[in-house]
Length: 41
Image: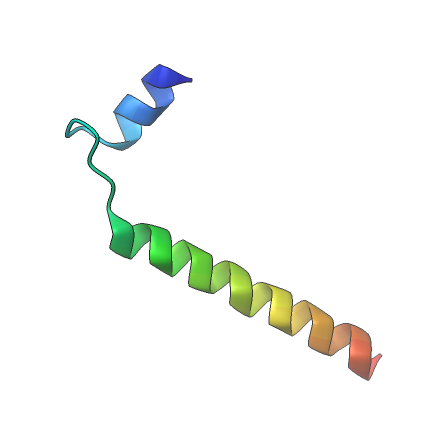
């Protein structure tokens, strides 16, 4: 598990918050879309 985190972030304890935010926003858009489809259906 530690090796996976190190391979994703080459810098020590560096997290690309723009990438995390974009993935989080994409997940929220998918959830809203799924709920919308359930409501319409």
